[in-house]
Amino acid sequence: MSKPVSVVLLCEDKQLSAFSRRFLKKRGINRINEIERPPEKVGGSRKQWVNKEYPRQLQAIRQRSGAVLIVCTDADELAVECRIEDLDEACKKADIEPRKDHEPVVMIVPKWNIETWLSYLRGESFDEDKKDNRPDSRYTGYEKECKEQVQKLVEMCYVKQALQEPTPPSLKAACKEYKKVKQ
Image (cartoon, rainbow, N blue to C red; front, side, top):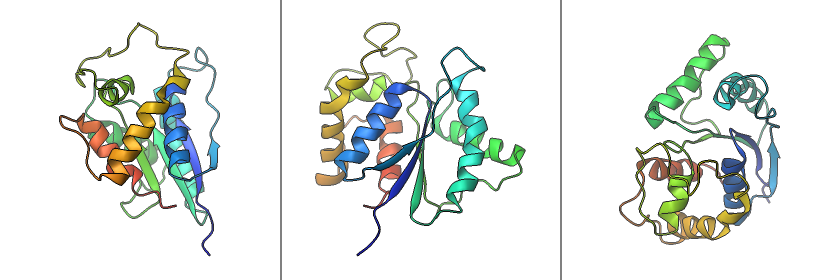
């Protein structure tokens, strides 16, 4: 019998964390260790914090058998690929080899924010290139309200093996990345 997967979760914000945790639990993954985020108004932006923390966590995950690192960060104005390249650059600056395709590292990168995905999964219109897809300007306090959207994504990604079109391109990429996590 194989050992259960252990996940290290590095998330930029609460909503990304809530979404990812629920998604993983729906997939039967319960061993989740989340890296504690600094308070919102301390020490610069959360994106900078992820850039600083990622190389350390990548190096640590390479030392652990059966563990997976999941990095959740917004691309904002960048293309998803460019945000991942930023993380690779952070590794190079820290003198750490960037992630390789075969490594147990999953990149979950919504374009501006995860609210685009939530809108899509609720069947609402969305524009992934639009900065603010939130029902209000802050969207704080809604972290628990993504249960139905997570269930829908699990069904599309794993049961039906197809996302409903049109799909946000960053969500297609995330669905492919999540599949790297084996139960």
